[in-house]
Length: 240
Image (cartoon, rainbow, N blue to C red; front, side):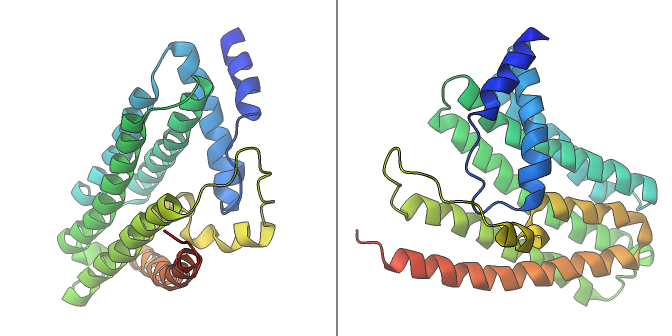
């Protein structure tokens, strides 16, 4: 217990900037990840092992969406597994900082798992719409385009964000971090992965889930356009 307490104290002073992070990630996921990182540290786990634990929870949920008939109970189980997987996804980086820094291979593994999870989740929603059209009300083939469109927006946003951070010049060492904006943190909630996971609580609602999922997909597409314009503008000022 002493190691966990000590780890928590160290982690509170080693958090990443809250700039550009939604309220869910700032006040729910990161704190949950902090406790998981402290517990993992006490157990002697490595960041890569924590990443794989995150993947196990996430892909169990993803598989359940495609393979199991929709129900309210399934929705609760899927949401819980996705949320726990997301918390462990935050924990691996925090654990790496606690251990004195991560590795290039660890960061690579984290990003690969995130990309696979994002792609697989929307693919499995498409499979679910195809396998259980009566339950979801997705008998028309047009509904199968919804997960494809959502997947496109999510993947391009994920990759575009990573590439933008890679290409932008790093701030000078010791420079103060910009203060996080509460308004921006609220505005980002509709495209936060943790908020997206909540929609799976509606799996037992049939068409209710479909419309909620489609609505978030439209929001994701609109945010993608805004992000692309912002990123291009920022990178246009960078001299190579």
